Image (cartoon, rainbow, N blue to C red; front, side, top):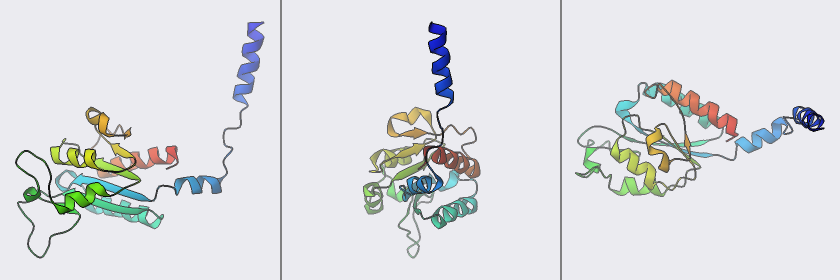
Length: 175
């Protein structure tokens, strides 16, 4: 009798309609995430122009994207002190980022914060941990306690591969 139960169960399981959500509903679900932050180290991004193209594509799809990065220079020139970048002057002697820009960044309530930190830079690790983002995505499994989702990206120095893997995962999650 168990064989009949198992056979009927398997039959019912195989016949469950997989896609009950129509395309309009999927679009509404995906649009719930509208504010994305990207945290990275300028020196570890292989192609900033390609990253800019990806950000523009996401912006055109209705997402609001903000980037925040570390630039490995002693300090910015007086006339070019961008709000979305920090330098060595903004990092104290034991690796803690400080200052008004850092405080503003950590207080932003991103729907998603993507941290690209392949070299385990301490100040980026701190910024990610201190962020008030609702959902945090990272690439390194040893920093698991600070992320909601880890993307297994073997080529974590290739910006195209990183964002491709992130986009595939977000599409699967319908974010």
